[in-house]
Length: 119
Image (cartoon, rainbow, N blue to C red):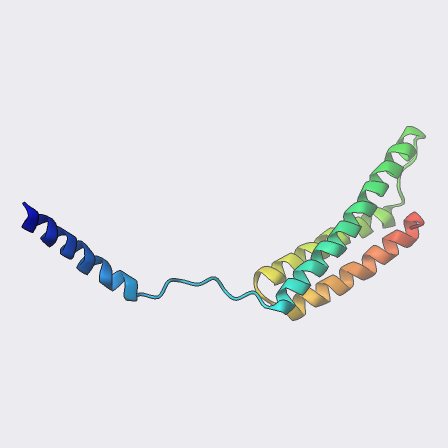
């Protein structure tokens, strides 16, 4: 009985030994540049969302008076959302240059929106 336990224990150790030699899969290393770009995305996205909330509030007041937002302002919002999506997709593929370009465009569009909303 004791011998059977020893054999089972040794068999278990031998069976697990090859698994220990196999390197564990690693997540891709997150570089400082990647973290900085993701942080920049969050900052630009947060600012855009704040302006979107302002737009929604303005739109409600206008609608109560029978008016609507200027179509150019609505188009700006759609373009900002699209550029944020491009930036996220580029970051998901670790394409920092493309993400940076998309964020540059997004930031410029957010600035235009801020000017239209008086912010």
